[in-house]
Length: 638
Image (tube, rainbow, N blue to C red; front, side, top):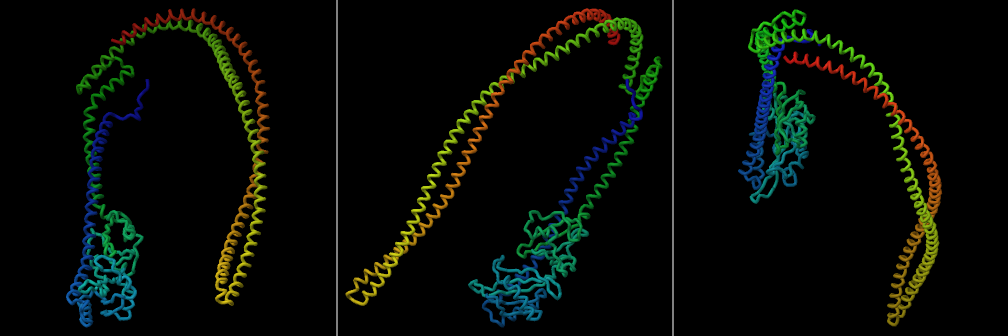
């Protein structure tokens, strides 16, 4: 019986206390995790919604600003009927617009071909004209929404401020385009808009164009430096039209992780981006996690203290019972357990006392039974020794017989199986090889016949080639005759012209003969080309036919070699019959082994009879032990 390792086992008080702490802590931890997950999701969604609203407000401000400029210009154009107004009135109008709104750097009226009619500018005219020429193709386009075109944002080379051209078509009463009003606008106003946007405590907003350049930001140095932000994920997605969602987490403008929102201004090809540092966005969540951990630790400590107190109250009676049982196990057999404490513990102590009393009775009776068991054991030992000797002899004989019989059985099965398969396989192989040989003979004969036919065809094709040469010679002859006929017709025409009216009929005949000779020459040339094609084709056939004849001849030689190899294989298979004779000798040796096995079995019968006598003596001793066991079982059952 093994003893408990006191260094490894824990007391009941510690186990109950640990259970209280673990159960309480686990429940609180699971509850806190779910609450924090829900809070985190809600807080993150709230932050994202706020950012989207901020970005939409910023984009709406920018869009409204541009729309207001467009509306004011359109109103002025409608008021003076710019398409029908005089040059002086138009010039006065654009100068007034330039003077009243500081957001305009220059205003140009263009005709439908892009030539400048009038210009009002805050910068030198030569520089203004150069800028206009740079963007004239964009200004003349009419494919944008509402026929208003916007150029890409560009940076002034002297002030580094962002600017943009927009053009509005000038139409007459019949809505026909008679020109364009192009306005160059300062975009510096957006710096103030972006600087005034509050995105949390440390967040910010900025505007980029479709090439990735920053055109408005809280940090004006980036705009003046014409910085390109296409390496930022939000800008890259905007440039590639991949904004399936408006908000995501990435490495932001300042190089830290941020939650960014992107709102595209489609008609301007711009995007307003707001970024809130992830550390600030997660600050409420982190704070909630910290206080939740503190709360779980405090509750776990309170539960642990309560568990220790409760465990101590529950374990006192059990500890007393354990000490009493330990002293009894050490030899103090007269002790009794104290029946006290909780109902279950008291019942346990009472049952323990009864069990201790029954144990004492069993020990006394067991001592008496031990004396009888010793005498019976001696008898069993002597009988067992005799039986062991006989059993060893029997086991030895049985092992030999088993081994011999197994070997004979396996050998017989293998021999029978191998002989059958060998005979069948040899017969089938011989038949198959003979059939293959016959087929190879037929193939060889056919290859020989094909070789003859191929050679005959080659000779006939060569003869045909010779005849095609004759055809070419005939064609040359026809060409020569046609040429001479043509010369004769020309001479006839000349003679006919000398005889005026009398030779007119002859002139017609000469003309027809000349036409006929030309057609004959043309036909002869075609026939000559056809003859050359036939000759080339026949030469190709002759070469191919000669190659095929060689291949057929080589195939015939290979087939004859295969046929000889098959005859050698048939001879080797016939030798397999010699092995069947050797197998017959093995079967006879197996019969001799069977006789030896029978003799061994007779010896085993004699040993078995001796083992039976010994078994009778063992049975008598076993009966005595059985009676003693029944008496001991009755005592244990009490």
